[in-house]
Every structure is written in structure tokens, then in C-alpha cells.
Figure 1 (cartoon, rainbow, N blue to C red):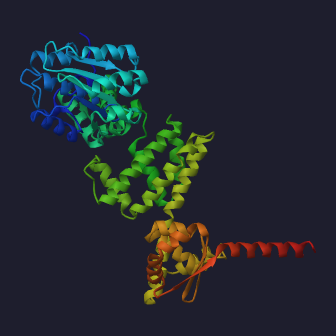
Figure 2 (cartoon, rainbow, N blue to C red; figure 1 turned 30 degrees about the vertical axis):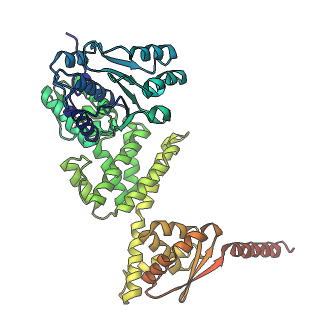
Figure 3 (cartoon, rainbow, N blue to C red; figure 1 turned 90 degrees about the horizontal axis):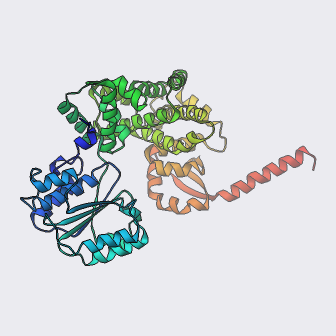
Length: 494
């Protein structure tokens, strides 16, 4: 007896079986129940999220012996015929292979004939964005004035390629990526029904790798069961899918926050020597940091994220001394660095990326110093021993900036990252009760719009009202250039 893969065995047969698309199933059921059945539907969304399955369920619902019905019975001759793919009044067409005008004309001519066995003739055009211009023109006339016994369902992964003339004649339904939580629950359900045991947390690896596609997740599950038999072990999933173990990712991130660069680099080297590639480590770190950020922002596990109890405890321990924007900055930097990993030296790029993540984490030390300085300015309380001296010593590396002015910039970056980012590109100085901004014309409008906010932050940081003084940055650059010229003249006796 031939084996049927899990993705086909567990293909939804009723609206209630569809995973992760309640906004669509509810609308379609209500429309059928109220008799408001459209002549054309457009199902769009990523691969493996249920577009074709939903089209077949809709075809069954309108042709069911008890229908049109909000739920097909799945037992009558019509339902069984559609399930097996041999029901004469449901015509599935792969638009990727039948894009010609002749095939489309043949189809549009057939719409004038009445259904042979059902109430409706249903045409399901998969990958409909692949239709040629001539085929679209032939289809358009039919969609404008279709006979009442026909329903067209166009499915596509690239809705932007569907002509507006077609789109405007269809009811559009946007299918969403299936959430990790929904994928995991479905995989657990399948394993329970199939009598397959599993380690706790194994499905999280599959859900992340599937990237919102339930069909891909079910295909991976099939492959893993084929390898492990009646029990799914975590190590088997990791080996088959080729992903980095969560414990390794945890220890790499831990080394960043602990300031142990040597351990982190050794972990990366060890992981690479075990056969993992650069991009697997990168993707694993992005996923791990994303989970950390969401848990911190939501102050717990959000409803759309699935994470095991043990991993949640470990992540929570990491988050005790970390603010959400620190992780956000790390993720932002990682996403910007992705192209570097595709260059000629991906290993070096990954090592540099790791070191830069460590550098970003050290901003916490600056923030602590700033808090000490702020508290000292406001209350006269003694700052942490050596903190002010250490901070002032760091500031001497940039003599153009007064220490308090640079400290203010770091303070603003913490409180208002957008405004702080602007100040990073400007020269600023603090003199008594004045805050001097050497303004580049590119940022004039932004500084003007943020004026009230800047005044508030100045008062908050310095503990008193500060006048904002605007000077021309271009003139400062000219003066600096003049100084260099004079120095050169003196050196060479010009």
C-alpha cells in the first residue's frame, strides 16, 4: 500500500480544520450561509498557508448535497469526489503551465455549459499571476459578465503581478503566515494522532524554520519521523534541519552580556567546526534575540510566540539587567549587517558582528555613569567612586565636545533615540547656561520641530533652564581648515 505524506493526509477538509486563517473562514462561512456567494475570489498569501485547500473547501461547501452549506458534510458523493480530485464540476488549472490564450479561451467557452453534477462549476486557477497578457484578456470578459452557475477562485503568492482589472472584479482574501504557536500546536496534534512521541521543545525548531508555512512544517515533520521512527528527539531535529542548538545560542548571547569575548568567539568557532554554516548561526541569533526583545517588551510571553518553560526561565535570567532597546539596537545592527555575511569573508564578518554586539552591550556602562552624573548634578549625591573621572577621561578623546555636552547626547540617545541620533551627527557644546548647537542645514528643520523636546531634555539633564544657541557648522569647519593651513605654513616655512 502506498504511503500518503503528512501534508496530504492532514490537508484540511472543512473550514474548521483550517489553521491560522479565522478571518477568512468566518467570512466565507457567513457569506455562504446568507446566500451572498461571489462569482470570483482572489486568494493571496505566502506558500503553504492554505490557499488551495480553502478553495477546495469552498468548492465543497457550495456543491455539498446539503448545501450550499457553511460547512461541507465531507461524506456525500460531491464532497468525496472533490477530495479525490475527480469531481467533474471542479476544474483545477495550474496557470504556471497553462498560460496560453488558447487554453484560456477553451476554459471561458466552457463556462456557458451548466454544471453536470453540482450546483456550481468551480474553476481554481493556481499561481494565477503566471497567466500571460493574452490569457488575462480572455479571462477578463468572463469575469465581467459570468453566468450565475460559475465561481472562479484565483490563488497567488504574488498579488502585485495580478492586473488591477482582474483584481477589481474579485473578492480579495489575504492569507497570513501561520504563527509559530499555531504550527507547533498542529504538529503536536498530528503526532498525538499518529502515535509519535517527542521531546519537549522540538517543534519550535521546525516552526522557526518553516517561516509561517504549515505545509513546509509538515514536510519537515515527515522527514524527521522517517529518520527517528516513533519518537522525535531534539538532537535528531537539530541534525536533520541543520539548525544551531538553542543552548549554544543562549551561551553566545550570555557571553555578550557577561563581557566574555573569548568564550563567545570560541563557541562560534566550535559551532562552525561541527558543520554549521555562517548563516545558520546568524539566523539562530536573530531568532533568539527577537524572542528576548518580545518577552521584554510584553513583560512575558506574548500570545503569538511559543517558547518552552525552561527556555523562558533562561531568557528571563538574561533579561534581568537588560533594557528592551538594547536588544532592539542589537537586532537592528544584525539585520543591517546581513549583506556582509554574503561577501568573500563571511567568517570574519560574523566575528566582527559578534564583537560589535558586545560593544553595543557596553552602552549599559555609559548609562550607569550618566545616571550617576545626573543624580550628582541634581542632588549633590556622591557618584560611584571613580565613575566621573572615568567618564571624563573617555571624553578627552574628543576635545571638540565639552564633557557635559557629550554626556547630554548620550542621555538623549537613551531617552529619545531619534533625537539622540541627530545630535550624534552634530557638534555641540555646553557653556554655563547655554547649549550651543553647530547646525548643519540638513538637520535645521528637525531641530526646529523638536525644539520643545530638546529644551525639556536639557532642563532634565542639567537641572536648570538652558538657552539653545544655534551656530553655523559650516563656519566651524572653515575655521578648522584655516587652522590646518596655518599649521602647515609654519611647518614648511611658507
